[in-house]
Image (spheres, rainbow, N blue to C red):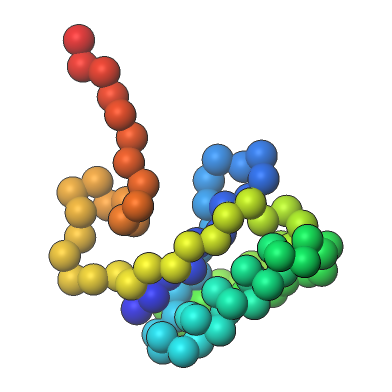
Length: 91
């Protein structure tokens, strides 16, 4: 299962969808990055393979970042996707 995660401008919580096939995930990732390159305000509609009734519509101009990663069988303790971390000060 591949997860495509969108980070929106001025929004701390990302949006994500899952795709079963790597080719579908790469195609979606490519279309979103192309939208970022063009800085267009077109509406992007995304569907999720894991939750068939989940649909996301977002303006391409509001996307700040996109990442793709494969969901492996080994989950992290925090449940967060790879590539993100937080620092905490324990006193």
